[in-house]
Structures are given as C-alpha cells and as structure tokens.
Length: 339
Image (tube, rainbow, N blue to C red; front, side):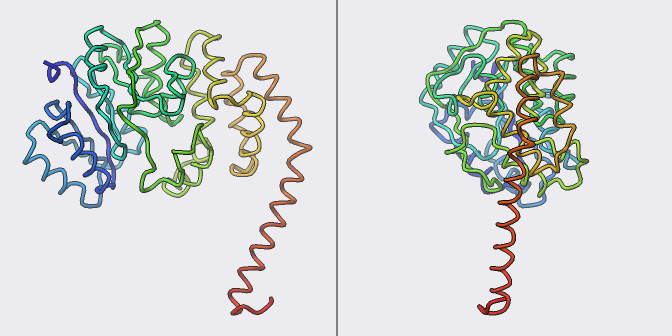
C-alpha cells in the first residue's frame, strides 16, 4: 500500500487561511493522498493555526501535529522535515501552494521503479526536469519527492549547514546528483507555486531567483547579522551549488541560476543589487570565489570592474528620483501647495 511507502510532511507558520485551503485539498474525498500519514510542523504560530490543526486532527486521525517550542526560522523548519522522515519516501510541502493530482499515477510508478528523486513540478523550467535546470528548479521545496535512505547522517549535516544559504534541502538534491541517482519527472505539475499572502513577488511572472525577496527578509528577520541579512537568494543559490562535487556539473548548476540569462548578465545584476540593496556587502563576493570556476571568476571580475563605470549614473538617477518623491510627499503634507 502507498500509505506504507510515502508520507507527507508540511511546514507552516502564521498562515491559517492558506493552511486550511491546503489541508482541505489534501484530505478531499478525491485526493489520492488523503490516507497517507500527513505531519504538519507548526513553527510556533501565534494566530489561529493551532485551533485549525486541532479541528482537522479530530476528523483525520492520520494527521500528526508537531509544534515547535519556539520559532526556529523557516530554513531550520525545512531542515527538520529531512530529519524526521521515516517512511521510504517523503514529500515536503509548504502551506500555500495549489495541487492537480491528474498525473499522480506517475508518482506511484516512479516509486515502484525505486527512483531517488521524483520531480512533481517543472513550472519554471518549461517542462525541463533534467540537470542542470533541475537543481535550480528544486529550490522550490515541494517540487520533489525524496527517497529517505538518501538522507544519511552526512547529508543531514550538509542540510543543516546549508541553512544560512536559504536552501537547506538542496543538500539532499546534491546527494542524488553526486551519486548519479535515478531521477524521474512526472508528466505534469502536481504542485504549483502561487503568490502567498506574505509574498511581495508575483511568482506567475517570476522565472528566476529574484533578489526582490531581500526586502521581505529584512522585514520579517531584522535581527539577522549582515552576513545573513544581505545574503539574498541568488547568493544563497550559488553557495548551495558548492554541494555538487563534480566541478563541471557545479559550473552548469551555477549558470542555471537564471535560465536563458547569460552568466555575465547574472553577475552584472548581482553586483548592481549588492551595491543598491546590500550596501556593497563584500562578503557576498568573497564567499562566491571558491564556488565559481576560473572562467566564472574571470567573468565576475570583469563585471565588477565594469560596475565602477555604470553604477555612478545609476546612483544619480536614484538620487533624482528620491528627490522628486520627497518633493511630492511634501506637497501632500502641505495640502497640495507647492513646497
């Protein structure tokens, strides 16, 4: 029975409305996963989430609830999934996605073939679930079902060590790549990423790891030290590529950070954002040098040199824009009169 082979572990925090919608979908009468063991890790929510979970628990005895004593942060909560998984396969989920189980039979077939990784979403790679796009794709946590035996103590250590890089679960993906494991992609997007209630990004339009998430990080986690607060998602992804042992594959995964965008343009964007949004935080550069190969480091250095000529004009435009905004605000304060 599938119930003996596959379990679902879902993380949540303070998103009762999203969680309720997700649980209704998972436990719906026509859901192929309604009989599976489903564990929810509540990261010490302060809203009505505990009451909601208690209500669902009464109706569905196969629902297990783990409530953290304190909020351990979203990335540590992801790592906890990989620590507690017990069934031969597990599917890590978030609380704010949508589902289409039309291709679910493909999942059961992949399990019967002893796949190491089952990809259930290729939403951002136009159906391409092969390496290197696969690595970038799987920054989306629910996009893969994992084989539990691959989560060895060494891999789990890498998962926890990768928490500061925002994508701890990529350590599990890297393990499959390093051992050339069997990867099967289902024919369809069983889970789909949508805009969450706390997000400031339209993921329907987003095709890469937009650094625009940095304001969100600063808003919800202002206590972080600069090395974390300024490590925006692209930097975290590049650092996570270090987990791939083969240097050629690592370089390919790095280049896939932004599909169809040349690497030199990726570096130009990274340098611009680091200057504008991160006070030119140097560690974002130095931490990447050991990860990049010689050619990529050469491209980065070239773009860094180029930035000295392009950034001044950017700051001039930004200063002018800020001045115009300030003037407009002053006019509003004065009741429409010129300042």
